[in-house]
Every structure is written in structure tokens, then in C-alpha cells.
Length: 336
Image 1: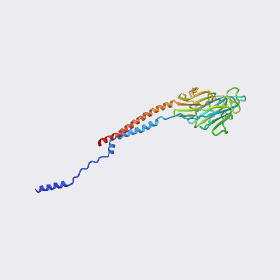
Image 2: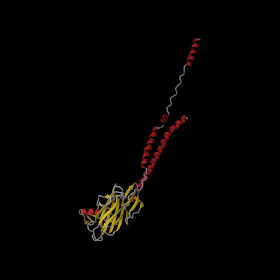
Image 3: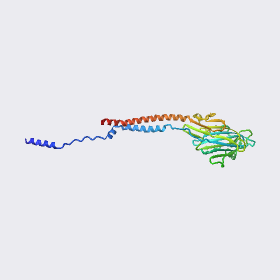
Image 4: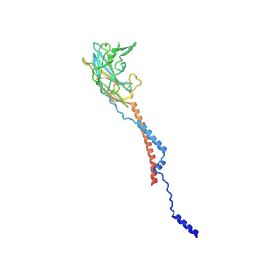
């Protein structure tokens, strides 16, 4: 029996000893479970597609182009000694930064066969200045008066000196207001009786504020109004012929007229592969707005491509959101 008593004491001692409870397994935080369930490579690919394709599509989206605003100026021409005057006005894009306006003045002169002239124009909106090339001739109403023969230059079928050439192309006038550009000169040689004779050639260039401007698919132009008068005698009869070229007509590399369509303004009387032309009129300004058809078509195509890319980026974004939300739904179901 002593063994039995010993065994009972041991059992009582064990029952009195506090039991050690097993600690529950530590659960991972919800963030860790979420990160374990997402498919990282898929998320990275979708994020890259959304950002890269979306940025390209946004960059290609068509702009909101509008017709540019160009100044509406005028040319006041004074010719003393002419019975009739013909003005050939040509506006063209000389290069990517420069717009040029050429005035070629011809006349039937009086008994003296000489004419004095001056040209005044406003320089408030833009800053016209004489173009450097005095020999460039782009007029079409009359044949070019410049002829190089035997190494010499003739003007109006007569040999011309440097002094006569300077007078023909004009020199800036000092006695004008600050907002007026003035040029003055004289006809070369002695005019033949009853024959159209060159009187003046005025070439003005604009680096900014030009009467011809491009903005995306749009082009705007204003061929300035022309007024002809005389300071010492009655106003001569005059006619004005106008031309507009979208590129330098002296180069004539590729025909460009068919690439432009008139949107608003005065319809040209005639066209050729390089420009638009208006027949002799009363000298009022010719204003117009045109559209470059190739640029317009390219804008439509680029707009379509931009829409497709933005659609792909949008689809990738939706898939990215779904891939990010799905593991959250699984976690909520487990908690419930």
C-alpha cells in the first residue's frame, strides 16, 4: 500500500502544477498575405504598358489648331512722271523663318521718260525690312527686267550702273514716322515712248508679324492693299496683279498648289503648280485662310493612332486594377 500512497501523492502534485498552454501560430499581417497573392510580373507588365503606351498616345493626340492671325497692312505708292502704272504684288514664304513681299512697278511714262517713286507701309504690327537680294524677281505680270548679257547687267534693255540699280530697288527714307517704313528711288535709264517700263522693285522681308503665317494645317495670308498716287500731278491709272506662293517660287522644286485648299477668302482667278493668282483689281487687300490637305490627312491618321494607343493603355489600366483588387476580395472572404 505504500506504493499506492506514493502514486496518489505524485498525481496530486502533477494536477496542482500549472499547465502550459500552447501558443497559437502567429498569423501573417494582411499586407503580407496580399503581397503573397498578387502576381508581380503581371502587375509590372500591365503598369509598364499603361504608362508607356498611354504617354505615347497622349503625345500623339491631335492638337487644337486654329487659323493664325496676320496683320492687315497697306502699300501707298507715289509715282511722279507716269501716265499708267501696273503693280505686280507677290507674297511668298522665302524660307522657314522669313516671309517676303515683292512689289514690281511698271509704267508708261510721260515725255521725260523718267519717274520718281516712293513706297510707304505701316510697321506697327510687324517689322518689315528690305530684303538683301536685289536681283531676285518673282513677278509674273511682266517679264523680268533684269538681263545679264556679256557679263553685264541690263535693266529695261539698257546697261545699268550700280547707282541706277540702287535707285531702282530703292533706299530707306529717313523722313518718316517711327511706325512707317519708307523706300524711295527712280526709274532706270530713259523709257521708250508708249512702252511699259520698269520703275521700281521693292522687296520687303518679315521675320515676325508677317502677312503670311502657318499654324498646323492652317495658313492665313493678307496681300496688302495697294494705293497708287502722285505727289506733283494727277493720280495715274493703275492696275494690280497679285500672286501668293506657299514656298519660294524661285526654287520651284515640287508643285505645292494642289496641297492647299481655300477655306475662306477671295477665290483666286487662276492657279499654277506653285501658286495662286488674282487678276488686276482695284487694289483692295486680299485676305484668305487655307488648309494644307497633307497635314490635315496626317492629323486624322495620327489622331486614329493616338486613339488606338490610348484604348490599349486604358485596357491595360483596367486589367491592372482588376489584378490589384482580386487578392483583396479573397482576403475578405477568408475573414468572413
